[in-house]
Picture 1 (tube, helix red, strand yellow):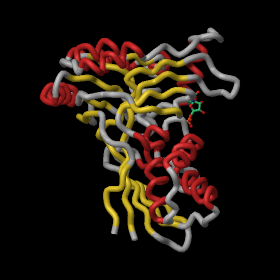
Picture 2 (picture 1 turned 90 degrees about the vertical axis):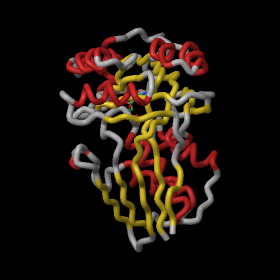
Picture 3 (picture 1 turned 90 degrees about the horizontal axis):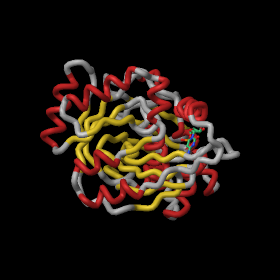
Length: 300
Ligand code: C5P
């Protein structure tokens, strides 16, 4: 029996970050959107535990944590421990989400692994339990289960769906070098050391989604980590400028970066922006959101 589960990348349409909490995490008010770049996790029965990863030619295989250190190892141990079963499976991850890019590729793999192994081992874990196991694995793993568009609070792990009736078109430009999420949050702390700051509200963004108008959404996009990401990677400011000059309505850093996102007016406009950016950037992707969360795509 083989199961393949597909999990989407996320972007943050609004990322409001508050002052560091005593546990080291930052309180967030964020609006996540799942977009159509996916990692697939395939699992099958095995007498022990093996994990393999395949990548497209534009992803550096060495940037993906090897077995033993991959978040999928932790996901398997956590799920198996929760039910008191052995974590035995042969697992392969087919990556297409940029690695260390601010699009939650590792979180997508963890979410997909939870769903796939739950099926393989016949555990029938409840949705509530899956969401709390996901939250233990990482702040944006619950959203990778849920998909669509959702409001995230707490450290990002508390998710509730929000209405998002349009399809939005995005151009995605990954970076050759990744950025470490903790390093970006550390720089955020250095740049913004007000100990009382609360995460900014997502009200404007939520209203913009309801208009279905990309020009209005463009004006409402907001990322509090952008300053820290640009401080660590000043070259990204030029890329954001270039995308806007190529016809994008707005460029922004994805989450903690360094992937950059460009909102386009339509599918055709996105392809045009991507065509122009391709002249200077080796990897330029066109995608759309919202899309579904982690789901089984094949079994047999
Ligand atoms: O939860 P996750 O494992 O994705 O977090 C990775 C790191 O990002 C944390 O160790 C922390 O440094 C930072 N982080 C944070 N506040 C959040 C989410 C993540 O400081 N809300």
